[in-house]
Length: 132
Image (cartoon, rainbow, N blue to C red; front, side, top):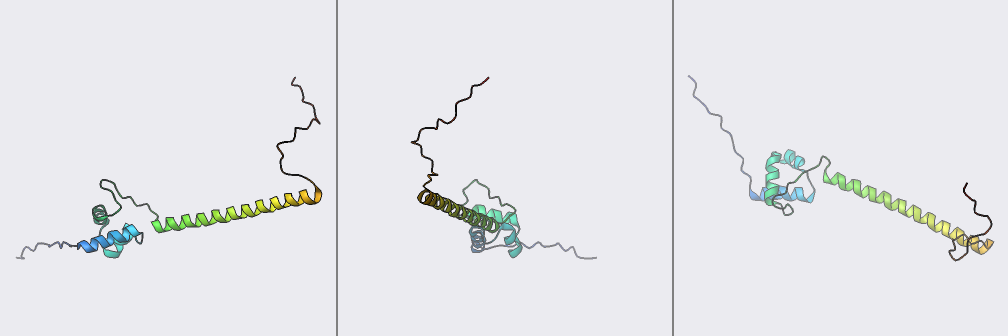
């Protein structure tokens, strides 16, 4: 007859320093919860509990929700978008400067004022048409 051997479940105990280090890694944006789970072998509900307990930014009663994209990827996308927009604004400014210079040259050399002058009266070259 075999002895009744009970499977012993080992319970992991993590130090408070380890928990706080994981939370600070998450808050700094170095790692997502999923990455921390794979890196340290700690299940993500446990990591979320530590975030709720030790987080400097998380207010009591609020939940942390992580989107599919990591925060680093989002930040990189936003920085790329800002760079593209700055480039576009720069190109538009160059075009504006060029057109203003062309208007100035037209005024000096051809004596043509292309800028709208609000003080001039409307032309009387055409009559108003009557509606039928």
